[in-house]
Image (cartoon, rainbow, N blue to C red; front, side, top):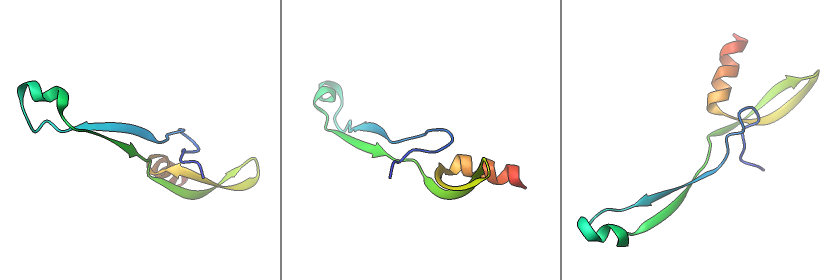
Length: 70
């Protein structure tokens, strides 16, 4: 399963964190950790060209889709 939104193509992003516990010259030796930021995906059924498809969409797109259907 790919972690990509069907509409906006939002996907996985890697980020970093540097702990600046010490000031001054310790900054360059500060511990670094990497993390993976995943999108908040939800399965939804949409109709495209007369066919019903189940797709993964992010919550931002889901809310827009839900609002437009009202």
